[in-house]
Every structure is written in structure tokens, then in C-alpha cells.
Amino acid sequence: MTTTSIWTEANRLVHDAQRIVVVTHVAPDGDAIGTLLGVTHALRGIGKHVDAAVDGGVPDYLRYVPGSEAVIKQLAEGQWDVFISVDSSDEARTGDSGAYARANSRAVINLDHHITNTRFGDAHLVIAEAVSAAEVAFDWVTQGLNLPLTRDIAQSLLTGMVTDTLGFRTSNVKPRTLEIAQTLMAAGGSLTEITARTLDSRPYDSLLIWREAFETMQLEDGVVWVSIPYNAFERNHVDPAVELNLSEFLVKVDEAMVAASFKQEREGDIRLSLRSKPGFDVGSVAFSLGGGGHKQASGATLYGTLEEAAAQVVPLLKAAVKNGMLDIR
Image 1 (tube, one colour):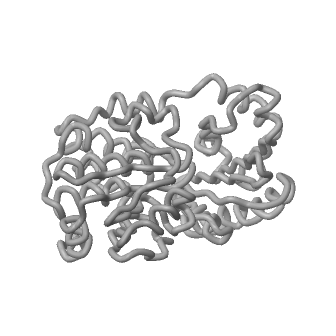
Image 2 (cartoon, helix red, strand yellow):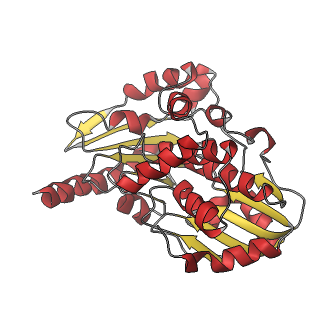
């Protein structure tokens, strides 16, 4: 439960606004899209004109979320009274759409749950103790704005909570987390559908890339990792935007406390994805590399070759394993 004072300025900005734009971070996950659309549905429900945007649009596996078909892939026109950034720890994470929205809005509301949030904007709905941005949005919608939950809001926000907690299995899940999920289910959110579409489904194309990635797999000192060159996508005729979730799978290895995947992008940048078992902190590693996230799930973008990236990151992950072992003792 959050004190009402945190909502005051955001409520005022929303109350006075007619046109609002909501934007989430690049390479969006379930929490990003769920929160984006949950907030959008809630504000449309009180008569606001709301645009929702994210660079590149909604990933295929999240297109079941209500309203996803209307999400703008790239903002290039429009002006708004308020820009709401959701699930983005800093301004750069909102990409080109966020930059355009910021330049063409009178005020900015920053809604997030990352401890590394830079507190940009005019009103800060940033609660680091929340398990997801969707939880922050739930509290704002139900406590701050005092709005009823519709099925579309519930399905959207429950998507965010399920995906960011890996099905309520991360170490930051509290009894209230499950209470909120129960409330969202009672309002029409389908835990069965969300779990099936996000945690228990995988496109065949992603397995073609997994097959190549496993050939690079290494395990040392509690760290397991794989590297994926860009030409692996070209060889297999697979869209590079396909959702891989490799690190989530690799962290299940018994001998591994920490898992990493290094994915080479078209531009040559390396997309780093990190996961860890409870008690081991990869969030601090990602933050030291200019990225962000949580203790058990985080990521960053690196520059250089795959070999250079692994040489830089793996020693940091081994140190995280060692520190986690010390904490557990």
C-alpha cells in the first residue's frame, strides 16, 4: 500500500490534461507492454485522448494484450499535455518515441519500479519495492485515481506482473503481490492465458537460434553463458527481433547461479541478458555496464565484439556468484 501523497502531482497533471501520450522502453517486455496498455485503458476510461507508443511496436507474443493493435510503432507527429513514461529507468530507454513525446509535451510523469531510476520528469511515481511497473500502475489507478478495474486494464496489468516475476517466482514476490494478482483476476484478468502466452510458449524460429547458441555454451565457476552472432539469424532466415529468452532457460542449470546471453545486433552492438537464482545479484552488474533491471533479471547494451563482451562481463558475473555465496553463508 502506498501513501496518497505520491499521487498528488501526477493526478493534477492528468486531471488538467486533454491529450496524453504513454511510451515505454525499447525492446519491450511483458511488464512494459502490460503497463503501457493498462495505463492507456484507465485514462481513456475517464475521457482522455490517449496515444500509446513504443519503438518497433508490440512484440508478436504480446499481441493478445487488449489494445495492442493500436500501439504506435514510431511517434512522428502530435502534441500532448502530458507524456507518461512507464517502466523506463532513464530517458534514453524510451527511445526515439520517448524523445519525440518529451519534446512535444508540456509535462512528464515518470512511472517506474527500478531502483536505478534517474527521477527524470515532473511527477515521479517510482516505487522501487514494487515487483513490476504494473504494480505501481495498479496502485495509481486504484488508489491515486480511484478508478474501477475493467477487464482490459486487469488483463494488461496482470501480464506485467506475471512476466516480471516469472510467474510469481522471483525473490521480491510478497503476499501483497498475490493479493493484487487475485484482484486483477477477479476483474477479468486471465492467469491461464497470460502464463500460456508468455511463459509457456516459444516460436519455432527461436529454437533455430537456440540450436546455434548451445554450440557456444560455456560453464565456469557458477556462470553459464552463450553467444549469438548476427549471422546466425541470417543463416536461419529468422527475424532478429524474435524473442529468445535464453538466459531464463540457462539459469535453470543446476550448476549455474548466474546465466548470460550475448546477442549481436545488426549494428554490431551486443545485447546482454542476465538472469540469476535467488540470492545472486546481476542487477548491479548490469548497472555497472550502463544497463539496469533487477537483482534476478537485468540487461545492458555493450559495444565491441562478442568475444570482447564476454571477456568484460564474465569476470563480473563470477564475482557476483562469489559474493552471493558469501551472503548465503
